[in-house]
Length: 584
Image (tube, rainbow, N blue to C red; front, side, top):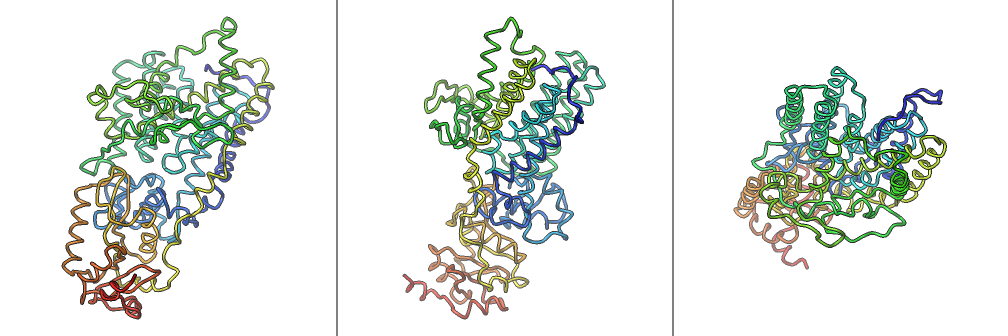
């Protein structure tokens, strides 16, 4: 994987390959996601699945007062509240747009553009990586496209902040960046610190990967190249780690009493992950794996696999001609990626559906702290995934170093194979709204604006990915339409599901709200949306205290103390306990 000579026969500017790859990344994102999802005014696709907490984390944080930690979103899951950090709403990106709140329309999402940015930067850093292997712009463009078309990236579209795989590519690029002296090495580590700080404000998993790769870079500059003393290397390692922790403190990642969760060994990577297509191939059959191992999906694609196997075969068969497979100077990078891959496979290593090796008892003592925080350990396979793509390209360019046109043709064939293999129609279908339209077709909802401050589901649903909180009765896909209606009318919303939650606090709040309802205590500034399963009990408990009607088939109530057009509209077709009992 050694860089080739810097000479080139091309007369084109050196910057055109990264720029073209950046634009190609943007085009590829529009192709597999659909151009509509990238438009900021289109929010419909985000009112479903794991995208809705991201949307409402951003929306409610944009109107929250500035303070520390950054990214407070108190109006979502009110009165418990949450933040950008715990809704996976890409804290740096959301904070960048917060000063523009007064200029932005209510219906405005920033995560479609975020997806486009991620794919564009994937192209940029893919081309920069390949530029360390070949000075030829055509090689850089075609190799960069293989990174853009990575199935592992497309598989992460369900968690938008985790689409920033370009942070991994940037960290790999720094390992190949020449650092001939201590000053150049310091500049390289300065860039590493910049990417670590960026990653820490995107997602904790990516921050950890970027930090681990940066520490590997410190090790290489110290032990392999001898550019630093041990003391200076230690100072860089401490500074990099402190930078990551500082940003996470800034955004409140440690604001909860616990940030741990269960699921380690379940959300892992399978040993066949690089060959198992996981729904990302039109041609290759899928291999059944564990239920949670989609988190460790790292399929390489037909094009990359063919390049890799063909190049490896030639390099092994003619070792005397091409020399050793791997340059010794990269052992820190390989070690760091290898350790992350081992953690991704978890303490219960599985080949397809069979457990081939397990060290769970040992891991409970050794890996327990990491396992509690990084339950989806399979994600740590991504650096090795991209290292394999880079290795396949490097192997090809090495085998065909005297035939650049052939190398370009082989890379072009791999790009075509990757492009036709991906079932883009299936990816686009995920961005088509499949839940019922948001409530609001009935103009009555708009009458609540200005009179009521809160919209509350009863019973409230406040849960996180670890199952903490109060599950309520509303399903995850029933929550977003009401959260959206609350946002449009300037109200807080009492329900939702997020990545992490203070479970005891959320449960205690839910129990207190239920006790108030059972005692007939309704807040005059709150609109209550009542689940059908508890409608009769709600009406019986609040008889004489509530004015209720049905909006779009759902029981909606307000306190009898409140006045205004919204209550009057509900009273036109009132629903009482007697009516509820008579309703089949």
